[in-house]
Each structure stands twice: as C-alpha cells, then as structure tokens.
Image (tube, rainbow, N blue to C red; front, side, top):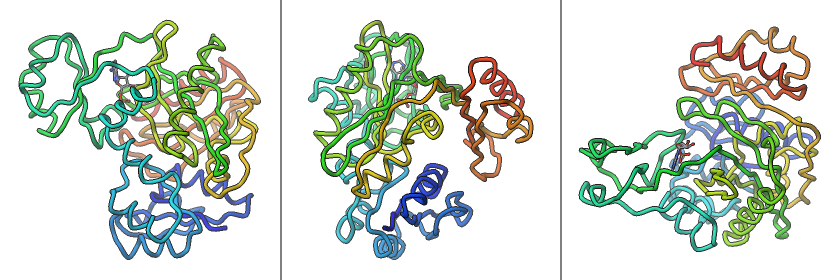
Length: 358
Ligand code: AMP
C-alpha cells in the first residue's frame, strides 16, 4: 500500500513513521527539498499547485491525504480526479474558511461563539461588545487576528487585517482551552481520544495535558458527540481535531483541523494506537485501533530551538521527538511527551524555556 501526503513537515514525518510498521510506504510532496519528512519518506519537491508534481504524487499513491488544511482547491480537485483523497475535498474546503466552519457548527447544533461575516470597516463598526476579528481564510497559530476590547481598537481594523473577508466572533470568557481528536474509518466506524487541555504562548501551542485534568465524563461525551456529528456530516475518513473553549459546562467550538493535530502528539506513547497510526489505518481502509489511554501524559512543544538532547533524555519518562528541522524563531522543531508525572514535565518545560523562544 502506498500513501501520498500533501506536505512534508513533521506531521507527514510522523505519519510516515506510523505507516512503516503497517507495510504502508509514504511519499510526501513539499516545495522544499529540506522538508523533514524526506528523512523517512520519498519526497517529491514541487509547489502544492504544480500539476506535474500532483500527478506524480497521485500516480505513486493508492490514497492521498494532507498534513495541512490550506490545500488549494484546484490541487485537491486535480488529485481527486485520478486518486482517492481522504479526507475529502469538502472537509478541507470547510476547514479553510472560518465562516463556513462556524455555519456548519451551528447547523449541527455544535455550540460556537456568536459570529458575523465582515466585508468592510462599516460592518466592524456595527458590531457590539468585545470581539475577535479573524481573516476567514489562511489564519493559523493566532495569525490574521485582532482582539477588539475597546472602541479605539476598531479604527482601521479592516485595513490592518489586509482588507480581506473577515469573521467577527464574540470574545468568549472561557476557563480553558481543550481539544478532542476523533477518527472515522472507511466503514463509518468512529473512535475518539480523551479531551486534552492546551496551553499556548504567543499563539502557538506550548503544552498539552492528556487527559484534561479534572474533566467530567459529560464533557467527554459532549465533545465526542460534536466530533461524531462533524465526521458523519462530512462523510469524513481520517483523523479530525476539534478545538474547544470550556466555560462552565459549555464546550464552545473554536475551529476544526481536518488532519492529525499537535495536541494529539502525546498519543504516540500515551495511547494504544497513536493518532498517526489511526489516520493511516483510516485512510488506507484498515480497521481503526483502540484509542484507549495508557497513561497520563504532558506534551511539551520545542519551539524555536531545542535543549541538549542528552539533558532531555536524562529525565525519566521524557520521550524526545526531534523533527530534524533547523531552529528558527516561532518554528516547531520537536516535542517531548512526558509519561512520568509533574516534576518530570516541569523539568522538561524548564529546559525548553532555556532555548531561544521557549
Ligand atoms: P484560533 O486561531 O482561532 O485558534 O485562535 C487563537 C487563539 O485566540 C485561541 O487559542 C484563543 O486563545 C483565542 N481566541 C480565538 N477566538 C476566540 C474567541 N472567540 N474568544 C476568546 N478567545 C479567542
């Protein structure tokens, strides 16, 4: 079996590593010859919209998946014409546009912040109360966003965000940020991992606690119900991540990612079947594996730079994953999953803080 992946970053790399033991070979397409998946997968170096590169990927793959949501629609269509693409083009398209995404949440009875489509500065001036302005497309890790708390912050906001279509959301007073990762197989079977708690710094995920501490069973059930509605509605195959805000007993959907997700990296050690293996199983038409959690974990992202690997490896229960990427400000270059409790994850966190923008 041959798996094709659009994108050759760390997600493609970890997919390829999970695919190997299942006898699945991976080819990744990435514009950069240094793409880090190249160490463990065949690499096709081409832009994401290059017809020749896409056709090559389609030819060598039984099924094509993606490690990012911003796949150009024409590229997804071109691949779909000759290959099996999972998840499907509609799932990618919905996740690319915050307005479509939030409309779908609403249609499916999934709680989400109140929102409005914004097409001009006048629209912004009409909005009431504190809110968050986000570009509808191509926003990630907090980019393309503006929090509006007082009136003066509205001035020129439309231009400031590039004069592109926006969405206005109410500013949700949440207690914490959670995410749920779920998976759906070709036969329609689904499974979900425990809800996790996420901590960001400068808009980038820094820490994930799995499971989310002190979580009521009803919250897990609610998150799974949301995820299952999305998976079924989109006739989805593969792993889907749903980011949520918790406010009391409410779980409020922020956004979904039609792919494996950084807040699920802990599943490599922490679950019976990792999110990467389950994504490979799903898109390749294999039965899903158990999503049962083996032990409590905390995942620490290594951003901008990595501590000495020997220092990390010296911490018992610290599982080091370096992606083979050159350090650069704001870049995710590795993660550490800690399976031995709080003193150990705090020690890893401390080491990570010692690096450039830890
Ligand atoms: P996003 O790019 O949509 O994931 O947003 C980045 C971060 O901004 C989130 O992780 C939240 O911390 C914050 N945020 C986004 N939307 C809202 C909202 N409607 N209310 C409050 N905080 C938000």
